[in-house]
Image 1 (cartoon, rainbow, N blue to C red):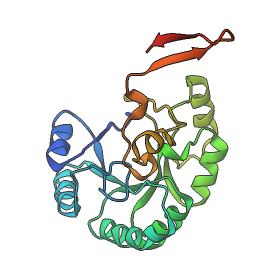
Image 2: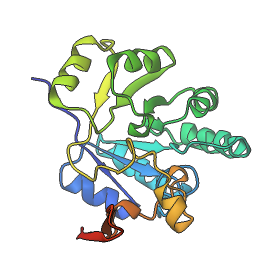
Image 3: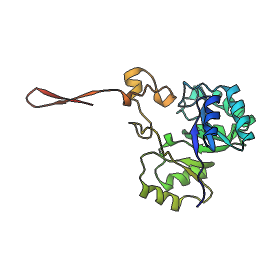
Image 4: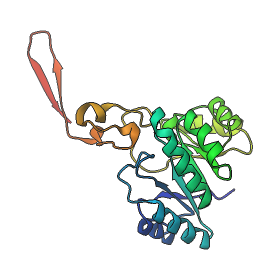
Length: 217
């Protein structure tokens, strides 16, 4: 049986070192402006240190540019992708088709990985991303074991598959959610989620006699 790669999040250079110390084969980082980790402490200098440290250990570093980008963001995406190409990150994690095209041109030496935010839940979608240059797909977290096996049987042979084995399952479909924007003015699809789905709520059910019943949650 092929040993899977163990990948852990790294919100800073120090956290990356700790992840490697405890057995991670790779880490993924988010850039502060272009990933869904907009409160990340990882700037360009930290990325350089993380990549250099990881490669000395024979480990890997993947970096997310996985926002759903507005048109005015693309010049910044091009610049960031060129930096990631120069510092030799091992993969760039992407959700948006337009970002994929842009990064493929601006970072030609880096593998393209499709984020779980892209909601890939079939081998047909895996084929689509593979035809458009992806080397890895991070599957949607909603899949069950039967569906996972079906994808593994039918995916392109040279397409690697990544899946979450621990972590939160967002209220929105694979994280695409406007609840945070609606309640807190913070857009989760641009990396500034207020974690609204994890707040404490009381649920009220309206009844026909104009009374209502409360259910604590």
